[in-house]
Length: 95
Image 1 (spheres, one colour):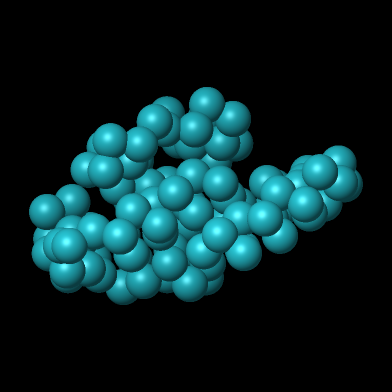
Image 2: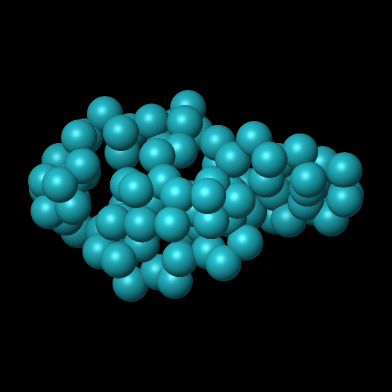
């Protein structure tokens, strides 16, 4: 995961890439934090999904960067004690 973070940080330093990356919103720094927390958690993925009342496929989609479900991100942030991103466009639109 550290290699991906370094790569992502390097790519995000390019303003055009950064804008496109955040506009597409399939994966963002908060998603990386959630996926890291999931992978480091001793709790099984299906149990995390169940405790957050999220379908396991939604969590798997987030992990694979297939798509981002804003309401699921909020629940996973709360579950892992991760601050919700203030600059997430989708989250602002859904609040």
